[in-house]
Image (tube, rainbow, N blue to C red; front, side, top):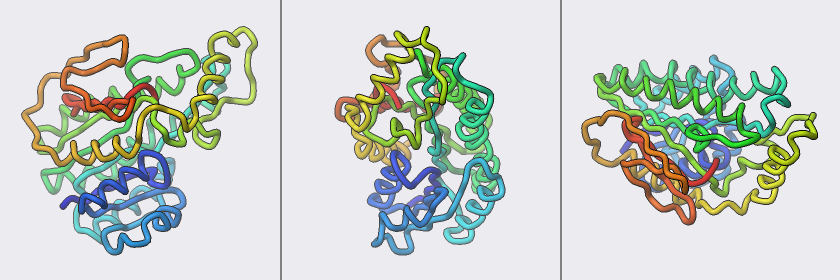
Length: 281
């Protein structure tokens, strides 16, 4: 069984991936800003679960969490960069502070986690990095410009990471979720900014209203998605193929295929094999 290191484990995809990995018999290092809330979710996990506080904007807490994982389990096999935050606002409405905050979490956060964890994987000559992106990392929409730009960045460095790590025996996967019933559209996760511009009411304003009405009514099932991610990580891996994207107006599907997740989808690519989950995360 593998050792999973998961960020943002207190809710949403992070919580469900933790649950699915434990159910599959893996050992899990579940990290979150408030790690105790994760342990409360799994009172019977025993020694298979290590919960560690981690803030992806704090490199010292990241390194401490990686060190704790290795001290407890001796290795790390799968790193899941799941922690993230959202910003739903017109590009013009987004001030520097809001933009920098979302980049700190969504871009610099996973980069810092990778820098801390990859020395462990390289020493092992094995491992798997799974970076959670979004369908807006592939094609964006009004209101999602800044958030999408963070996911475009994740896509770019993950593509390159794949080519750098493949010769070392380390696999890399991008997961691009669509609309799933997580807490992503809650105000605690999705920020809209204090100021709005009336001219954007028909576009960005309409998107804000749609997001509010869709919250917790999204078609995708995060439990099924998490299970598919865990199964994908355990699947035999073919030789990497050149990255190739195909656009589909109904869902941006990949030639590597897609797995139905309720009314959402999971498609996976290990940047040379990507996972795409439905209609928006």
